[in-house]
Image (cartoon, rainbow, N blue to C red):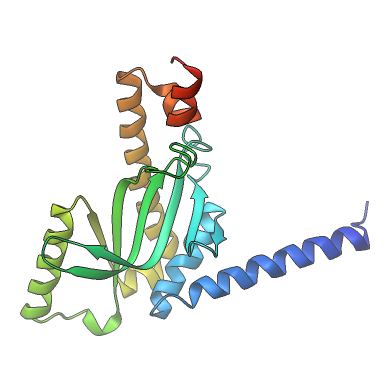
Length: 204
C-alpha cells in the first residue's frame, strides 16, 4: 500500500519541525566538532530537543533496555558550572534524571558528567594549557562532576564511538542508582516518583 498524501504531509511537516529544532540547538554550540557530537547523540539516542530549557533529552538508548523509560538523559551545551573557586563554561553537561520524581522540585541529577571537546588547535598543548585543563578538571571533580575529554579527531573520525562511550558511562550510573534504590527498598519511589510514592503510600 502506498503512503497517502495526507500522511506524507504530516510526516514531512514533523520532520521539518524536528530538523529546525536541531539546527537551532546546534547553533548554541561553539565549534563544528561540538555540532558533530550533538548530531551523533541526536541520531544514536532518538533524542528530542526541548527548546524551552535548551536541552537535548532522551531515554537511554535501546542497547540498555532495562533503563529505557526510567531514566532520562539531559544534555546541555555551553553550560556554566560553579566550583568553589570560579565558574567554568563547559562544552556539554549531561546527567540522568527522573521526570516527576519530585514534580519539578529537586528532580535529581545523577551522574553529573562534563564533556569537553578539544579542538584541532589544542592537539599540541603547551604545559600551561595542560596545567589549566587539569586544574579545571580537578575543581569540577571536587564538586561532583566527572569529566570526559575527547580530541577533535576523536569526534570527527568516530563520533558514534564517542557517543557510545558516553552512553556506557550513563548506563553504569543508571545501574548504580537502580542498585541503590533496590537495596533501600525504594524501587517504587524511583519508578513512580517521590511525591506519588509518598502521597499514595506505595511500597516496593
